[in-house]
Length: 151
Length: 147
Image (cartoon, chains in turn purple, brown):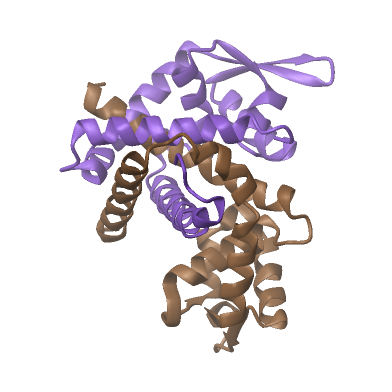
């Protein structure tokens, strides 16, 4: 925030991180209990990445970086989704090229329908403009953190 | 999907993407500081406060880390960052954050300032306040949703 002493960020950072960590934890627990389309939150997140970015394919190493997963964690998610026909996997050098299938897109849409009542319950009563503003703020912060030199 | 649902999904997706980035930043920016599992354990313990949380509850919450959270809880207890009250079984052991644990958590999060300063520098105070209030509102709603 313009003109703010960086040391004044401490309470804000603590609050910000705490809220983010707790919301993520609560969302993941609920998602893993509901298991929309039989998927874990992590698997759903991989399909969501393709839908959200509009990408048809992505390297596994990039997906692991994006989600801050180890190679093994991401490989497990991908293999589970590929086993259900939602992704295709093509070895490429020491990496793998991952592509979403039509079945994967359909599975994501169905899963979203399944959790839609849950999502709407979470944001019920929240002004659309506030939601959009906050989304933009979080995305700005994430993109800056994503582009840190050692990220 | 309606615009409303899209906005909600986008918002919650950003939260889900930010969390692991922030946690890994702590590890990268301050190598002698907490690893991801101990940091998660302290954040959760800080949140539940004096009530504490059992080992099984904490493990369930952070099962993505497998056994490492179990080790983290015992290591934090041994260092005095958590207070452990033995239960009838190890799963029932109750963990509460101590003053030392709060200081350790605060110290680890302080390492984030150099990274967050550029991320937040250009965001107007009013917009950040609005975002924080919305995050708190979402968290309170999630806390009160039926299981």
